[in-house]
Length: 339
Ligand SMILES: C[S@@+](CC[C@H](N)C(=O)[O-])C[C@H]1O[C@@H](n2cnc3c(N)ncnc32)[C@H](O)[C@@H]1O
Image (cartoon, rainbow, N blue to C red; front, side, top):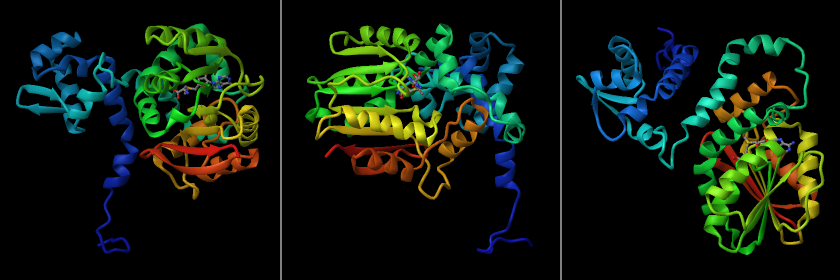
C-alpha cells in the first residue's frame, strides 16, 4: 500500500478535487447568473417552481440543483430545495451582505484565462501599464468594476471600520478608494470623520453616486487622479491603501507609501489592506492564486507579502504597529504611524 510519511494511505482524492475544481466554480457562477439563490431565498421551493423562476426546462434545472447540492450550496430534501445558510446570507441579491456581483464580475474577466496559465507563463510580459488603467479609461468598464467593488467590499469595509479606531482622526485619504465604500463605512461609524477618495475620474463618477445615495456628500469628496503619478492633497491625518497595490510592482508600492507618509502629520496613521502573502510566501491560497494571476494581467503587479508591507512602511519613515491577517485566507493588513 502506498502511504505518506504519517502512514496514511495515499489516494488521488485531493489531486482530483483540485484538478477538477473548475467545475465547482462553474456551478456556483451558473447558479448566481441564473439567480437560483434569489429564487430559493425566503423558503424551500419545489423543482417545478425553481425551473419556472429560472426560465429553464425542468430537467436542466434538476441538473443544476444536483450539482449545487453536491457541493453544499443548496440543501435538497426530496423534491424540495433550499439555500445553504451562507448562500442565503451572502449570495442573495438585495441583502446588505450580498457579494455575488463581485464574484461574477471577477469571474467574467479572469475565469476563461485560468485555462491558459501555462501559456501566459511561457509567453512574454503583457504590454500595458496595469489592468486598472484600461478599465478606468472606459466609462462602462469603470462603472462595472466600481459597482461590483461596492458589493464585494461592503462587508470588509464594515469590519475595517469596526477594527480600526478612527476616533482619533479627522480626515481619511482613501487611496484608490473605488466606490468609496471604505470611506462611507468609516464615516458612518465615526461622525467626526471626513474623507477624500482618490481614484481615476471615471471611477469617481460612480463613487459620487454611492456617496450621495448613502448621504455623505458633505463629508466625502472625490479627486480624479492617478495615485501613482499625481501629488496627494494635504490635510488628511490617516491614509488607507486598500485592494489595489497588488496591481503594482514593489518600486511603485514604495513610491505610493512614501507619498502618503509625506502628506501625513506627525501622529498620522497609514493602513495598507490587500491580498497578502505570508512572509514565507507559501500562501494563503487566494493570495497565492492572485499572485499567479498577475502573470496574465498587463503591468508588473505582484501580490506583496507581510514582510514587503513592513518594508514599504518602514523605509518611508513609518513605525509599523502591526502586520497580520485581516480576512482569513486572503487579505492582510498593516497599520503604521508617522513618528
Ligand atoms: C479593487 S478596487 C478597490 C477599491 C476599494 N479600495 C475597495 O477596496 O473596495 C481598486 C481600485 O483602485 C483604483 N486604482 C488602481 N490604480 C489606480 C491609480 N493608479 N490611480 C487611481 N486609482 C487607481 C481602481 O480604479 C479601483 O477603483
